[in-house]
Structures are given as C-alpha cells and as structure tokens.
Amino acid sequence: MKIKDQIVKLSQLDIAQEGRLLTIYMNTEPNGSKQDAWKTRMKNGLKRLGEYSEAEGGKEQIRQYQQLQQLVERTIDDNILDMKRSWVLIAGAASGLLFFEKLQVPVTNAFYWEDRLHLEELHELMNVYPPIGIVQVGGEEVTVTSSFLGEMEQKWEYEWDLEQEDWREFKGIAHANRVASGSSHKERYNDRFEENRVRWLKGLCPILEKHGKQNMWDEIILTGEKNLTTIVSQEMNFDSTRILPKNLNGNPSHQVLQAVYASM
Image (cartoon, rainbow, N blue to C red):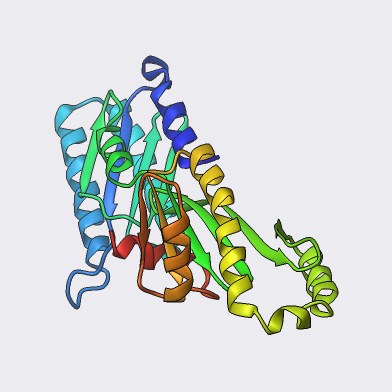
C-alpha cells in the first residue's frame, strides 16, 4: 500500500476503539562522527515515555506501553540494516503496529503516548516533499520513476523501438527481444544519429507529461547526459521541470532517490 493511502487509512482510524497510541518520529541521519546517535535518542525517548506512563498510574496503561515498547524495539531490530534518513512508527494498544515507514527525508524527533493520532508532522512532510517524477534520460532508453516522500511508488522503463519508430515500455524478456530485433535496423540511423536522437527525445515528452498529470507530480526532475536532458527540458510542456546536473543512468533506484532528494 502506498504511503499516501496508509496515511488516509490512519486518518479514518477509530480512536475510541484503539485506545492509547504510541507515535514516534525518528531522524536517523548521522550526527557528525556519531553514526548511531539516533539509537540513543530512541532509547531515551522510550524511557521517558515509560516514566510518564508510570507517573500517571494505572497498571493497564503501563502494561500496554511496555508491550508497545517491546514491539518498537523488535521492529527496529528487524530493520536496523536497512535504515534511511528517518522513520515514522505508529502503534495502538488494541491493534499493535499500525504504520511503519523508513523515509528518505529528514524528520524532527518526537515521541507521543496519547489518546489521539499525531499526523501533523506527516502532513507537513507531504507538503514539503510532494509527488515528483524522476526521469533518467538516455539516448535510446529512459527510466521514469514516480516518487513521494522520498519513496519510489512506481517505475516505468522505455526504449526507442527502431522498427516502429516510437517509444515502447519494456519489461523483462520483451526488452531483450526488442534489442535483438532492432539491432539489425540500427545501421540505417547511424549517419544521422544525432538528428534522429533529437526527434526521439521530442517524442518522449508527451509520455512524461501524461505521467505527470496522472500522478499529480509537482515537478519533473531530469537526470542524464547534459545535452539530452537539455533537449527534453526545452520541449516539455509541464509547469515545473528541473535538470539535476548528474548522470544517474544505471544507478540502483535507492541511489537515484538519495541523489534527487539531497538536491531538494
């Protein structure tokens, strides 16, 4: 389930039936040379909440908090090798773990143990890091990524089909078949390769614009060779288009996301 859908579902939660809720926003970015300083902050924050719970009295509330504290610790231990820039966790006394996401965007540390949801910070993050499109432009291959809150929501890969003279989405073996088929026709383009490549890239723009509209992107960010991204940027009919002066072609998705969000 996409993060946006999860947040909508949380907003519809029946608080009266759920009971107390534990909400944690934790920034995991390194603090100087202290790579794991956030672990100490998490431990201290959980300890303080436990002390507040004991001070308020009520054995049932203390029991509930202790169970959720153990749930938090297990969840973090299970994900300790896959941390990003932050994480957000929400757990309820009745249902247990309700929301846990590791994010590529920073958050302000916060701990809540109350009879209500604390989604204000998540809503603010949605405003600061809205849906965007990331386009890795190559001469004949293009990767398009839809991202929200620093996470990849969907990815499409396109290749210029020399036989059909059109951009085609490819997946798995279909890509290999097209490469094999198209290679025999490539020679006829070699003499006017640059001229044809400009035409191909212009034909890409309507595809990107359609993705932008369907996914409600606030911005399209172009990466790749400078001459190629410049062509696409000049031909795009989209409210906000930006060139990231890096060639991220061939990089894993998580590295692409890190580079893009570091530039924001």
